[in-house]
Image (cartoon, rainbow, N blue to C red):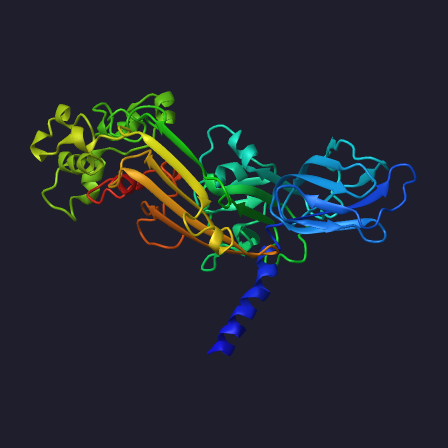
Amino acid sequence: MNKKFLCILLFLLCLVPCVYSGITGKITGKVTVAETDEALPGANVVLVGTNLGAAADVEGDFFIISIPPGTYTLSVSMLGYKIVNKTGILVSADHTATVNFSLTPTLIEGEAVTVVAERDVIKMDMSASQASLGASDIAEVPKVTSIDEVITMQAGVDVDPTVRGQMTIRGGGRGENGFMVDGLMMVDNRNNRPMMMVNLSAVKEINIIKGGFNAEYGNIRSGLINVVTKEGGKNVYSGSIDFRITPAYQKHRGLSVFDPDNYFLRPYTDPQVCWEGTKAWDEETQDRYPTFSGWNNVYRSLSRKYPGVTPEDAQKLFLWQHRVEGIQDLKFDSLGVNTREAGQYANLPDWNVDVGFGGPVPFISQKLGDLRFFANHRTNKEMFGLPTSRDYFSEQNSQFKLTTNITPSLKVMAEGIYGEIKTLSNNPRGSGMDAFMTSGMDILYSAITTSQDYGLGGNGSLYILMR
């Protein structure tokens, strides 16, 4: 049993460098003497506030690996030389920050010199076009509530609003993109669609790579979205909450979809044309509305199949199927339809809440290698732009992350993500992995047209969307 356990542990430890390869960065540089520009071997290089550091080799070169993304201060010291600190060093996932130091000799202990590091104009280790966004950058973007909205604001990235996860990077299809979270690829293998369930409160850094990938990324062609999530602090608790509410409003222009005078219904309800057809209108009005041959013509085409049905019956059924407001004004009260209630929509607010909180695990943190946690949850509710059997498009995402340092140089993470969507199908005649509404606005992007069959079937797509 002990041998089996040791084999499993060894296998997991071997996986750690592979998992971390996409979520940490590196700092390298050279330490020299300021007056002679000669290498200064043995200089101590420390990443302030962490247990990471290095010593310069005989050529004065040093490197520090496995650094979580963020902004750091680097301190270099050597006996007989002034201590030099450089602040504002930006470390990004999968990239190397180059920082060089020149130390001045001194005979007595002097004050530390602090220099603000400058970001490299050209990153020599970057082979691809890439955009990097930190948590502070995202916080400054107004109105965004999801990671999708942040990513699609970048140059070269676009999203098809009619299909969830249909993200295109430089024109490539969704099957050519990758989505990575904390070093693990999160793509639904059934349809190769990114599973973008990470909440903004959990994001530490987002890297968007647009072509020219490094060797560690495979099975993608167009682009990669690499997300590094936050972890709890070792000594302090911190959190955030973002709550937004939008008052109820109509998400389309013009009249209500139940108003008899709207674009889709007027040809079938206007007494001037509904019986004999829209040809009774002048040419300008005909150009503004769908063409309809009239209920009398519908009756003539259906009378053999449905004997005893009148043109008025066909119109009544059409109006009932579409729950048209004002039905009582057309003297169809006998249908017993509560049209005011059935024709109500755009009456509920949209709202979004995103909460994150983390810190040391109480009572046992120090005993288990500074065990810390970070938890976050997002609930997003958007009322559908057109009336449906469900009021809201509802989305909930939760994440929990545990981090511990087994040794000063070995960190272990365990995290879980859960997502749930409650929505509607956007394909009434079938189903599929992509056949669902992805937001409250999605229903407006669907093709809202009417067919030529206006009889008892009432199977225009407008009817399908509203039933």
